[in-house]
Amino acid sequence: MFHDRQDAGRRLAARCGHLKGRDVVVLGLPRGGVPVAEEVARTLRAPLDVCVVRKLGVPYQPELGMGAIGEGDTRVVNDEVVRKAGVSADDLYAVEQRERVVLRQRAHLYRGERPPMPLAGRTAVVVDDGIATGSTARAACRIARERGARRVVLAVPVAPADWTDRLAGAADQYICVQTPSPFHAIGLFYEDFTQTADAEVTADLARAAQRDSGGGEPDPDGQARPRAAGKDVGIPTSNGGLAGELTVPDGARGIVVFAHGSGSSHRSPRNRRVAAALNEAGLGTLLFDLLTEAEGDDRANVFDTELLAGRLTEVTEWLAGRPEAEDRAVGYFGASTGAAAALYAAADLAGRVAAIVSRGGRPDLAGPRLSDVQAPTLLIVGGLDHHVLDLNRHAQQQLRCENRLALVPGATHLFEEPGALAEVGALATDWFAHHLARAPSQP
Image 1: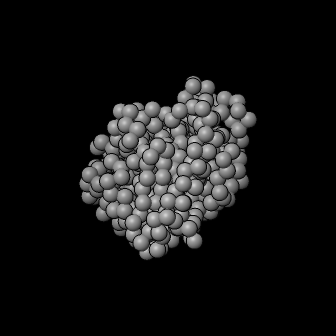
Image 2: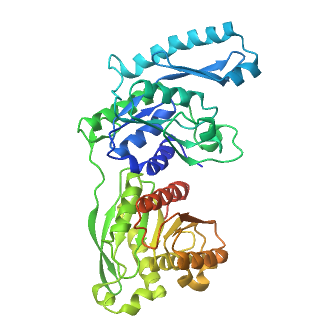
């Protein structure tokens, strides 16, 4: 499900975009939650701090949490676990005293003499790498409230399906990327769940502090790194040149090529908002005009799926020869008629397109080529876009690749409703982050 904690953090951050600009402080739970939280803090342009919490493990089975403690006098005990495990009051007291010593040491290790970041009147976003019993997360949320947070948001990449019931009342809002069932252990949903070292925690905090001070995003060697900026590109084709914009963040795992809908261009504000969400998640993007200016004057061309798919194929070949695309997988994002072009082109480029996302698409215009598509495909449709929804359901039946139909409730065809495009961005980021990270690089 997730490659590592950084991947999980980027995908979780895509779900938290609505919190940007709301006087947020991101609180990572050491140790494993901090790398996840650092990605969320970067996306929200928010400060990052640790919320030091220690699990109270059952004496003879320490991996089983019977409660948790936090800075100050915060204490949460799961009475049901204590009772079932037969833990006495003396045993519980002994475990708590031992963990309080470690808690004080950890807080000093991560912060030094610096006091905890002020939370009074602010939104505290508590982040961990996953939820198991929930005792640690509940304690962290209680710490945030006791320190004066106006609003508490609990955000994790993965949790049991009933996690909000388990943690009812702990937070004001709950955000999670995936809630699989059955759920046995957090680590089963990560390819790399290597234990986070203290040095990694302090490095994450240092990077966040440098960003907050205006120093930009630091490289691993500590030097400031500017944020990714798009650059205008001219793309030669068999029928003339096309205008585009290429953005490739440092360390990008793939590049998503956008195919716009009829009557639109690479300046489409809706596609640009989705592209910004992908860039925030560490993915590259290429937005370009599917047609030359002369071709665009002929209205029939905007519905010529074969022409548009051929153009998309040419652009993909051009991108493959660019140094920015070296060792990076390619995905397609198609809107309206552009979705048909993306599916048609992907059928021709079997094995070279790692994933496809369609927004309010017309996959029906790809006709018989649908069954030849191999790339995992996500079809996103507005819940109120009834005609297009029917077309997508019919097209989904013809797809033989991995596929999913995702509805955005209350959204119409252009996703103009509040929060609708943000949900499209989050869904697209999840899909591409999952599939591009696992795809082999393309020549």
